[in-house]
Image (cartoon, rainbow, N blue to C red; front, side, top):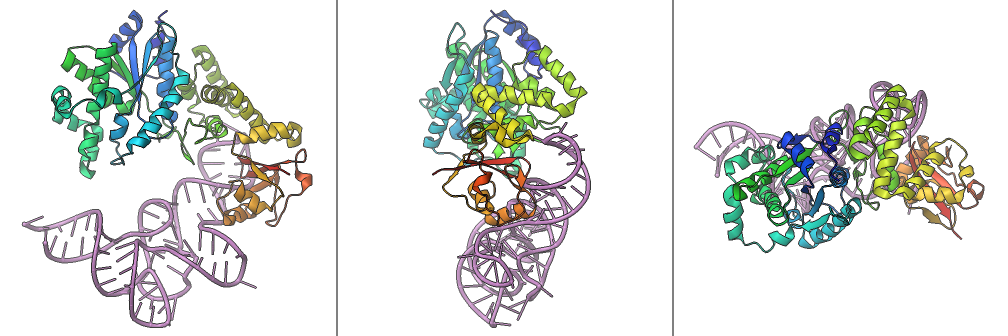
Length: 421
RNA sequence: GGCAGGUUGCCCGAGCGGCCAAUGGGAGCGGACUGUAAAUCCGUCGGCUUUGCCUUCGAAGGUUCGAAUCCUUCACCUGCCA
């Protein structure tokens, strides 16, 4: 029932960037079902790619027989952990409450809430809210030497520019979470992103000081691009999991365009494909990178995990039709329409406007000036045919099945236009 | 508290009374090449009813035929001396 190969698998996937004690961790995870926790702060209405690493890792642990406690930071989200770029702006209690709900809903599908090692969702507001300041300072604060807190990298970089007492205290809250889960639920392991390392060890240490207990922590690596810069950023910002904030099509395209040097790493971190299969993909990719078999598989796997198999199939149909170089009409209006909708909302019109208006109204261009420029630059296409004239107005002959137009800006920005009567 | 300097388009950074929607670099966008890649090259990069008009150069007011450029006040930032 306990998969003793778990730690080997995690290490092979490169998911353990830091660990309090590798050997002790391995021993604990082999001995029996370990109760572990991973937290998510509601700092946005949606989780993103970075959080996905934690969610999937939690799932791996659960599949290996361990028991997850997924924590949403209703309390910590009110404070915000210090980041190097500067002080955060506090969100209102109402906003945090709403985001807690949304984040919660995004985590749940990845875990199983049934069986002997069913997952539990917890909110740290439940034990933080009722606590008095006096208790907090006496029971928690007393265990934190300020000199140690000051030595942390984030804090040190912030000392020049300034850091509020609020953010400085964040580590106490997160450590207290671990302590509470340790006491009340026997949770002995926490993991998180490597930027959370200080917060993770803070909890381990607090448990030792306050309870004389022993707990483990490990950190997953920060996923970076081949050039070392931060991953998961697209033109539109972060790679959100929420389909409203990041279209499933765009999500799929992000993975499809993964760098050659990184596909292997991404397959290991973000998919549940077994080792042998990933190694085969890597070998194939090394042989013929231009086929991008690994990228295709990566995109398919991750998109399926996040958006489901059905949506993924639609996106693949879209990609095939739009990039296949084949005749668009062969795909048929219904298929094209469903596929285009995965990219961005369809533009519905009663009569066909000129190319400039089409580009603007579909959202492909931000202004008419930009749309005119796009045409002048040769970057505007209707049904994959370049439009040369700014005054061009598509005719009904251009419509696929008499009702659909495929609009394209540049190499890979598509929009569907539907004629409604 | 004293002295000096700064605040320009997404970012960095020139401009210092008209030739300025504002040099240059980066990012972005488009094209060529390609693998829906990387590198490279070329183009583009405030808005519009586009041979012209409108809104931009920290904020407000003023001088002038005319200001990003001069003056006044305010806000914020930086360096040197206390």
